[in-house]
Image 1 (spheres, one colour):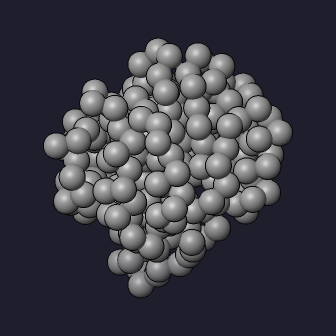
Image 2 (spheres, one colour; image 1 turned 45 degrees about the vertical axis):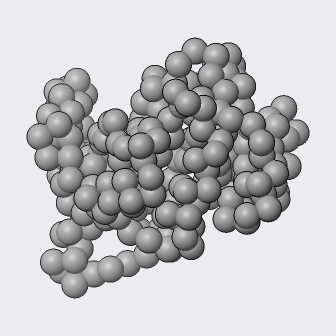
Length: 226
């Protein structure tokens, strides 16, 4: 599993990882749920944060541990695991995790005890209303993939409004919701035609600002306790 979800961030942060990192105050304590091989944890530690990871996949967890990340191996849906964590954190980070959980609302509720009074949760998750998925539906296609929005291991599929409902119904107030990653139609072809990358990026940012429900691939959500 770690070979699918592992990322190489050695050249620096970009995309959703950069946007998440920018949302975290200096020297924060972070609980990263679904840390995989610790590739993002290591970047956060280098930035001066204190990180505790939770990872279900044993092989991935061992790689993270061997690279100096403090990791608990187990499922976030195990009550005993959550109860064993007595520490409170500035940030609880769940990047592309909740859509894999059987009971995501129960996970969110169980984590409330681990958030500091001024702390927050940061979530990233896919948008099933992304334009390319809509196009496939119009053509009668619903094809699972090994990763991305249509990852075959996703147990739930969310739009902007259903992400909001999940989080708010679990005892949180959303303070920010934005597109962390997206794409406009023909973006790859525009770049191949030597359209300036800065112009394409500006078009994408405008699309994400005006119609995030349509052009967002991955949402970034910040929320605090109600």
